[in-house]
Image 1 (cartoon, one colour):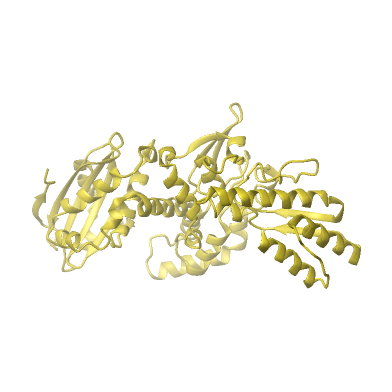
Image 2 (cartoon, one colour):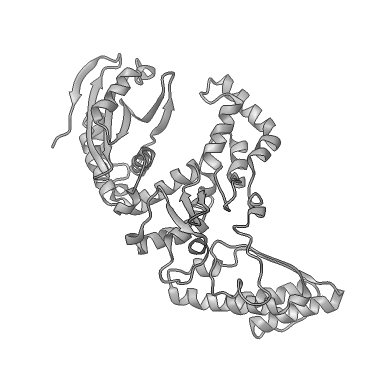
Length: 436
């Protein structure tokens, strides 16, 4: 409250005005009316992250509630000054329906899900192709020199699309790319979770921890617009609405008959980053970090040690996370667990015969994994042989362990795995089986 009053006084001083602000309401009214009298012009008001003082205090509901009341007073006063205002634009993450911002005779127009503004807050497909064509050509040409697998312009565009496109803000079909991450990709020429790295929403993770019984499937949910856009209770925020409003869910489909939206994770950037965050905050596996015992076991070609800890990690998640989960969700979680243990695995490593799900290289051994969902570890292992995934790793002075692993959607965990130890020339040394 005091900070907001100081800001009003400082804004007045910037315009060579002197006002008193014993309360926020009086300070705001004095600033706006004095500006009008000084220049006979109406004021433009821009408010960014109007809800920052609420969502960053959700750890203390009492403080968050007080801040909400302060904001309510602020916006109630602002709306009473309509005759002095030319334009008002407000942004925020969540729509708190009782802040007075969205009610009353002079209410602002909520354009969040208005189809005519659907392409306003990101790059459309046409804009990416038009304004970044030179960058895409340059990236493709550079990749060709280094024999990169995604080296055509269309492949580069597909990569950008799968990582950063997919945000949809209305019942219409317009989707947009994340502008921040798209620009960072053009600069760094490789895909990465740039937006997520710029600031992890700790309040979202905190809410997920507080209400883990309400955890949502990573494959999404359905909701009507009112459920997505209004937050009434600070003590128990609807997680579906929060996931949507913070950008971790987006609209994939709209059913005009039921008026329901189908929500999903928008792209690879969000999927990878969010799964990694879940693993870091919920899976006990992260306590291992760079476990010397684990590295020693892997160097001794005993993956059983690793898989037992991964199974414990999967078991620590609420079952809702895996409702209708696809294979890539399980793969993403396994990768995040490996990262959490201090490893640096490769995912979807391209070869001339296909893509390897996971490659894990340690000083003396290379691990190659193929993952399946509701099939069998033998089928996964056979695919490694059929497609010769290990050929590009032969004669590197390291032994190779190839692993086929299968996840069970019923048990929401690894159900079985089978492995083989190969010489650096690719010859079978022995089969490796779990120690039950």
